[in-house]
Length: 295
Image: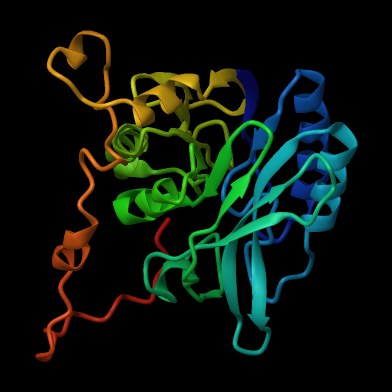
């Protein structure tokens, strides 16, 4: 079964003017629906807000637009914890076409708060979440993650082992020298989890290089560095075949990714604790993270 994803790589309004992104996002949802999209994916922290104290919450407006136009809207915002301490969770949210309460993922990696403090864009004291929920939709099971969590394969693996077939990983801003490795890892997360992985990012002007992608295990279905909205037709049929079948002699003649890597042919849960042992003796100390934003 084929469905359509609209990938939005916007020219975003900068912090201080970011509430304007809400109107732009609602218009993009309307346009995506007009182009037959079943999902629309926005970047991390879009439509915002980017900073604490949070001066607005876009969730109601985007959930209303998603229900009105009959699609799923994946977007970014923050969830305030303590206004005085400026603490917040960073969220990826998915609004549903039937108007039910939106799904939410609280970023889990890395340890905070350094990643969103002291930079030109974000400014809040990030608190990490600790759950990996997945969500059923009419098109397949969805997992949500974000941004540089792409460098932590455990995050998407946790989602895939919980059944996620379609993983949205919206990202923040221009990747600079990280661009090539980031692009590689988006596809790697699709290959190793036998999933479709979707990403996009904010651009603040047309001179910046974007990274919008839809990657399947066997090929990159779409990618763009430019601002705009693109629609991509995808199917989970091949993902499901690769997950349900076994790697055999001669499989490489018909499969461009290893089959069954989430199943018992490959997985050894009895070794999971050995991957990251928890010894009783004192752990080595590491340098404290610098208090500056990672963009």
